[in-house]
Length: 109
Image (cartoon, rainbow, N blue to C red):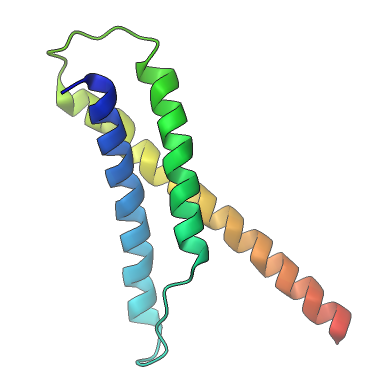
């Protein structure tokens, strides 16, 4: 398999693991019967995928690695970055939505 394709797979696994981790935390914190997957996390998941693909193409498209390159090296450089990109995107969206909600409640109250 091509190095760039492996990079995309590992980026996606990092993004997916962050999404699952966040949802599992929500399962623990939410009372039974009130659990709902917030649609904004699908959006952040897709944005993170796009950003990771651009980062992967920029990183692994410009350097020449032998086709026998160690997959551990590729995993260690891409999986954490995919996790980080998704985490940063989620936090940014949470800050924006919280700020917007606070402004709206302050304007109405």
